[in-house]
Length: 264
Image (cartoon, rainbow, N blue to C red):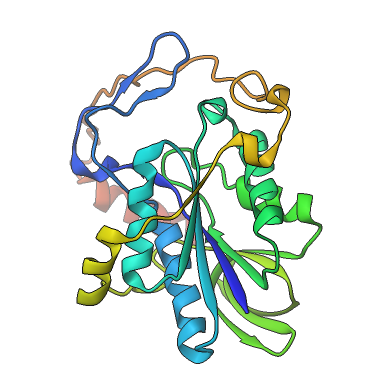
């Protein structure tokens, strides 16, 4: 069994660093901002490793798309226990929206082939669209389950628990399938000491567009039908209003009095 896990490197927005926006294309300037693995993707890695714990012959293959430094999130997943990795990195991919990104990832998945499950995070903190996973499942014509919290595999099916409208659903899904995990749905394991040493020498495969042969018209900004028209920092203001009642009561006393009168 082979499990593909999609991981993304994102800016560490919780690190209280100042984020600036490029005035030309309204994209985030990432230079100088520390990067981390998207939290929900790390939960997906943990879910894959739990399956590997139950089925030791399982191969966990992590995939990331981004610049050369995105190799760090693949190395992090490897130190946690992943077996293989692929980095999709090409200047032609820069500026790709979710439609173009799902196409690139789909082509890479088809090139890798022979997978049983695709796991990913429900959404990334930087884009927050939740569209890439469904886009890939649609292109591959496989079932998809969103907002998962856990998964187990049995023969040719998987049993998924997910949170939906304040309820927990159990879904039985045929394989292969794509499952997108909610952030913080499990506790990702720490890298092993052996994994920390091994990741320094380990190198994932690097795939460029010469390998995937995708038309340049479908890539990058030109191949992305969505555009960021405007980005701005909202002005936060605080206002306060003092309420006085003729009977001298406090606001809470006045509310309770009004409720009492309505109920009578």
